[in-house]
Image (cartoon, rainbow, N blue to C red; front, top):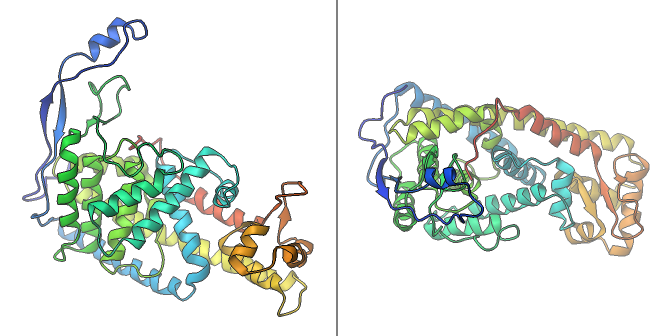
Amino acid sequence: MSAAAPGWPPIGTRQVPWRPNLPDEVVPRAVRLRHAGPYRAAVVPTIADLVPQVSGPVLRAAEDAVAEIARFDARMGAEVAPFAAVLLRTESASSSRIEQLTSGARAIAVAELGSPSTRNAEAVVGNVAAMQAALELSEAPTPAAVLAMHEALLRDTDPDIAGRWRREQVWVGGSSYGPHGAEYVAPVAADVPELVADLSRFAVRTDTAPLVLAAVAHAQFETIHPFPDGNGRTGRALVHCLLRHHGVTRAVTVPVSAGLLVDVEGYFDALTAYRRGELDPVVTAFTRGTLAAITNAAELVQQLRAVRAGWDDVVRARSDAAAWRVADLLVRQPVVDAAAVTRELGVPAQNVVRALAPLEAAGVVTEFTGRRRNRMWQAGEVLEALDAFAARSGRRGQPRPTA
């Protein structure tokens, strides 16, 4: 176990009355007794006026990781049109996988078109919206910005809680009947607004290495747990908000969550260590995750470039044909329908099938619905590359949910 960071306070606890709502005729007596009486909720210290101190090796590794992020961002920035959207989507999918919300690339792409898909795929699309909101609001990472990220995340799948601070007690692990015996019991709901305001003041300080600041801010956010659901995904969106705010990224989203997936248990253990006042573990988790993500993302981009170049060799169309613009679109949007082609490229609806014909003849796309109306086409090679990216991310063990 590493030592607590100098001057970094661990969380405390306080006793809180518990008023269970467990109907006698449904819940066994033993369960009711186990969840009777007061419980202990976290008392989370404020951090706006604290400077996080990490060990020398951890700080140097974090600074090296920031340099790698900046280099990757600069390289990808030259091709921002295709790869910004791809990397944003892969980060959103990876962040969702940490919460055990898994979905294949095709299901996600179908959900992005607004067509019926799996619930998990729709959750990933919500996460894409949250990440986009995080980047758009990066100039001012305020509590209102955090609420906007959460609202974008859940407005389609859980609108009753989207964009609202929680009003009830939440906890991680244990039983759904009550907080007694939980792995972690978050602070009481009344503490949330001021704690998030304090975190927002910490997030904009300029005397801390950016990745150290982002990792600590994320850990503090997860400790506050300000929402009934969606905390983990919103908290990882906040990381990208802060990387953009502090100028580390300018063009693309480095899929850090894909790196965290390599060792999800280590990531959760680091969050637990943070609550003891230890900063090195969470900074290390984000440093390692960042470097793993950059390696994985670079391989994905290389594969997509090769796929697109290969299409030039097999597609037979005039140089000015709309098919080539559709081909470029498919790199960043591997499932399309007529409405998407019209919306993204301005191809008249009546000409979409004609534009797709050379790509279909070459095997670049296939129609997979079998319908006469509301047809959709997929670029199989792109979907395979995206699914391979997800498989490389991997994960050791089964993650604990962070909500």
